[in-house]
Image (cartoon, rainbow over all chains, first blue to last red; front, side, top):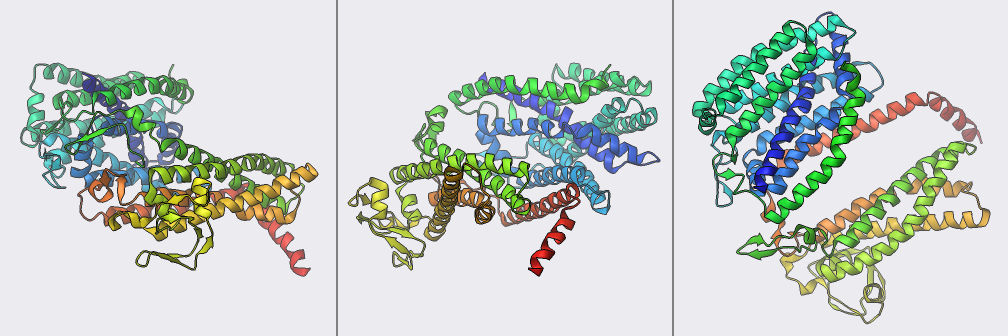
Length: 332
Length: 299
């Protein structure tokens, strides 16, 4: 029971990470892809939107990882051993991305050096979420085995499969879509800029649909338990809600109801990850590591949940306040 | 990790886990006090050193004088407390992890009336320290307040459970050396304040403060070397070897060197950017420097 509760908190913070941190990555992608007569203004708007909150957004990834090694130590060791290579790549991406962004912001002169930071920031914004999607996909493949406290499938299992690679691309498109949709609300006094981001959001959504279908098709052989999970009784309900929010987001973008589009996009991403989490349940690493067999002793889980409660009391109001300050004035 | 408690090991697996007991283990009190004070010491001396540097150039600056004074108050309070806490920590280590203490002091032969060895080159093969400065009865006095206190040496432990004696001993000596140097500067500051009720005008004292700016951070780093290298070959003292804890991933040299290179590069870039920011907020800095230097070179 306790372990399921911790796992639910992990899924919730993963969703929050996708909604906030994911949009940061998307922002970086659109920064690199900025084009047309308003490229400079697009970049400027993205930096303005990301700068005050990007560090706070990554709290959620840290929370997921801390919960994983505190509450599910053997799952942590399985993931860190079997997926050492993509996780190391992701970590390098995170380090380079964060430092390039800060260096660009605080580097005082507008010169060639600063443009180089922009490029590193943009490339790392593609690189990092690709490996995140790939890692999440690899957990579902069922190719990673953990028997007798040992990872028996080596260091290349799971993450080089077509399914995992498509998951990586899917994460890219999803974050690009999310960021562009968010950005349509941000520069309210600049309708031409809003339209740029509107078109980008629609393009990303268009790329997302075939990718979702490929993920589903490859999951049949690449992640059979996932495929089975998605044919459960609740799956049509969840898939229906996902499709509905995707359609709502697209229509809202089309008809320039940007605030509505933002809400629909948030719902879409939430339903996708919720579906992934439910299809994966109760496995952490399919098929050998489950929430139950990887759980830490009850004494640890109890204290962990107490700490989460206490931490939430401090963290949530502060984060709410942060967003209120920097994002509040956009919403009317 | 230095004094693991709060669990039992049954068939190689930890059971009966009590996280609170593990957190409040016998080593946590002295380590926490020592590190918290170290943070105050290191920051205070760094800040004092920076403002002392500016006071040397511009002795009339009210801002730098006030900032330097505030930092010195923190420094003068925290460094003597840190020396006391270090003494306490060493006696705790002697109780909890005798091989670590023996390596810190490069102490090979168990015995009474043990001298304190400063510096030198420890030699594991002959179990002696070459060229070290020996203070008779020093270690026995420090550990038990009695010249006849028995101190366990490394020879009482199997050879494969010795840490790297040279690195641990030298790191320890650097930590204690930098700490003592900072204490000396703090005493100098306090003495001047007591005599004149005014914070430093003395050029030599300001120069000493500039020189001691990095010492606190050197002490923090070497202190971590002492406690981490001194625990080797254990990662969890007495329970798990470091070599058994490491990931089975082969070729760890690749990520290790990649991350080292990345962080070295980032460090260089940070220094470069901070310098550039500083120069832009102090546009007259370069001019002032040349103006000031010229009369000096003529004189």
